[in-house]
Length: 244
Image 1: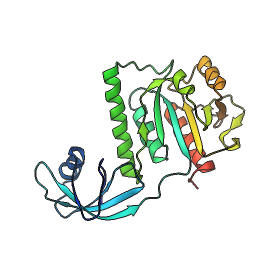
Image 2: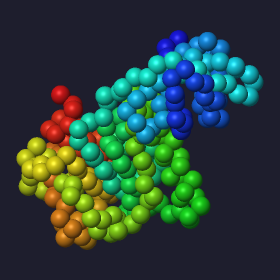
Image 3: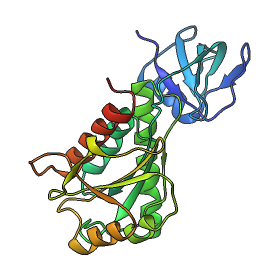
Image 4: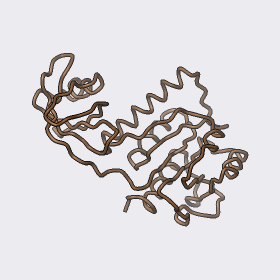
């Protein structure tokens, strides 16, 4: 069996043992059915390192990992992308978050827009955000990333557009005159705005323009929201990041 990568919020030290969290234990022991002496890899999501370990003291309810070695991970793109994603229905949002993390996005802010069609009270919204964060963590485990992107608290599009930033700000628009490949880059930061199903309204596009967002075109075809986000991130990584 291959060595699984497991996320756990801990500080790891070589030759020390750490108790696995409830989530990590459940995945490693109950799902993967690993046993004492089996190899696992741990990362804490905050530093560009992962830790090679072996399972120890495995019981029905707990297990420990003995930290053996520390390894630097070079999987972060030089391009920092903050994705502002219009909240979409069903599993489209889950899919977008998972794949955008695999492509190297750094921060994701779910956005309420005129056409998002999702209405949640505060409690359900926080549960949804936590669910999205777990999807992001799983994507990091799978893709080899050591630093976990954050899913910010969902907010209104108008509030997100007004946030101060030195990043290049872009919005996909099917009638734009400029492509991503022609954009000027003054630094390594991008804020990418993607609308929900049905796209942004004319008023929202105007508001984005008033807040210095460039309208850019990906191609002659109309893309679904999840396709648009992933295509744009891929194009940005090819032009300015680490996709070759």
